[in-house]
Amino acid sequence: MDAIHSLAERVRNLRPSPTLAIDAKAKALKAGGADVINLSVGEPDFDTPEHIKDAAVRAIRDGFTKYTAVGGIAELKNAIIGKLKSDYGLDYRPEEVMVSTGGKQVLYNIAQAMLDPGDEVILPAPYWVSYPAIVELAGGVVKCLPSDPKKAFALDVGAIGSMITSRTKAIILNSPSNPTGAVYGSDDLTAVAELAMKRNLTIITDDIYDSIRFDDKRPENVASLMPEAKGNTLVVNGVSKTYAMTGWRIGYLAGPEAVVKAATKIQSQSTSNPNAIAQKAALAALTGPQDCVRKMAAVFKERRDFVMARLGAMPGVECVNPNGAFYVFPDLSSYYDMEIDGRKIDGSLALADYLLDKARVAAVPGIAFGDDRFIRFSYAADIKTLKEGMDRLEAALNALKG
Ligand SMILES: Cc1ncc(COP(=O)(O)O)c(C=O)c1O
Image 1 (tube, protein in one colour):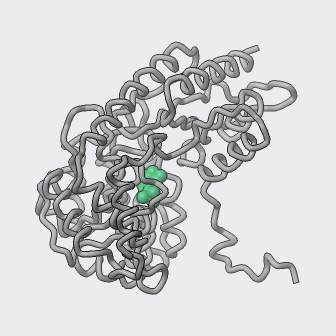
Image 2 (cartoon, helix red, strand yellow; image 1 turned 180 degrees about the horizontal axis):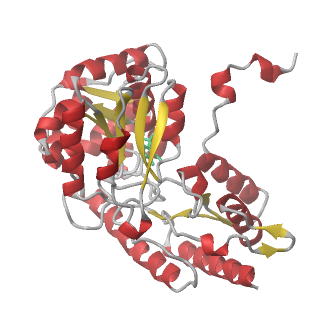
């Protein structure tokens, strides 16, 4: 029997994460000796701050190496409650908080806990690559809400109301956004909060990039702007991006107790508690000095400005100035339908392939984020690397123009 037939339909229909696939291809090329500039990665290039690593070493030495409570240790839950209070003015009880193996597992648990087959989730596009797969794995159906780069990818609040059906359970918001770097306006967030209350909709607010915003405003989300909407809101966050801790795998959820309890039940029968040592490290991250966070955000801003200046000087490249996260998402579609060396650039996949093969620059095709016009470049790399990456991109695009 062909082994593929023994696999569930669920997994046969599942697309592997395209960002991880490109990253793997770039790393394999690099391992083979190729000089690849990898701008496909979704993680800060900084090292985890020392005081956080020290806390993990201490945890190991102290024998903090056993199972913990499924939804996370009490101290960490309290630290999360402290962060949500100080950053957002939101009050949560420990029963309303769950710690998981990264923000990704939080989202997975939520989908498994909330969605019945056929339930709909509204997803503003461009969206983070894993949202559709997470919804679909739970049997849910994604309803895309397009956004317009001419309006800086602002949320089209007016369209949401008409997308809601009797099957609509939730909307996912991600601000600052991966891949666009857009930060939603307070008025738009407030309008979505009002709509959610009126139409009995859950808002999943993925705030994982909340510390990396360039407008000097405090973090905000639907619940901080409209406290009455807290009962409709699931706050998703984590330490991966804020503290350069992607490999530690700690994310968290705050929301209504019934949902948190259900999500924790899913976790109890899948992965159990998140890594005990990483929980101690996350505790040190949230309760320790925060100047490392501000420093990293300031460096990202310098790099954003550098990359935007370079892209701005390239003909036929349109790019919305990102207000947060560490990605630029230029529209490179003016280079589509061109041919080079017998290769037709018929969309973002072909262009990303061309850039990797010919220019040795790894970037993620926009189609993975729901819009084929764009390519995502991460600027989580030092200026020297970014300069080389932009030089190569410019040369590769010029070569396409012939
Ligand atoms: C928008 C968004 N949400 C959630 C995550 C998940 O992060 P983690 O699982 O590392 O906490 C990522 C990571 O790339 C992301 O970009």
